[in-house]
Image 1 (tube, rainbow, N blue to C red):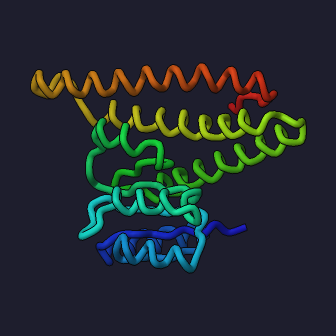
Image 2: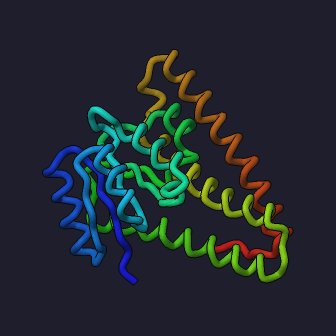
Length: 211
């Protein structure tokens, strides 16, 4: 079944590039030229995934993201942030819970397709694990927690990797280094706690770890 992708970006040239790339990859596409236009379009369609640019005006990508996730009708749609802007530790900690990935422009066809398919495959994996757990009569609260943590652990690992590739600590001033080191240490500590809990849940609900 063909996946449907909504591209939200206020630069028409960028929208055209991504729509062309996606159609060549076999995806069905919709596009919106602003955050508000995207929100309005989501009243009419339910895409499998959203590619959302951050640096838009007057409503930027983060505000658009919050609106998507606060709406019960759209909050479960996976969102990949699309931008030429460097991710900051503060943004990773504040918005990591909402997003599926953070894609840096420019991007190749393969990187784009791989990012999309990774998210869609993870959602299918979670759905299948939930189905099997529910068939066994597993406590629904444990199943819900498992589903949330599978996504959160994967996203946080990817965000930390992006931050490590973005910031060369030796090139920054001491004050900035301290702030970034503290933020990344906090993220890694939080990730370790999530990973440990996820392993406990796998044992409790009988889900094998995917390779």
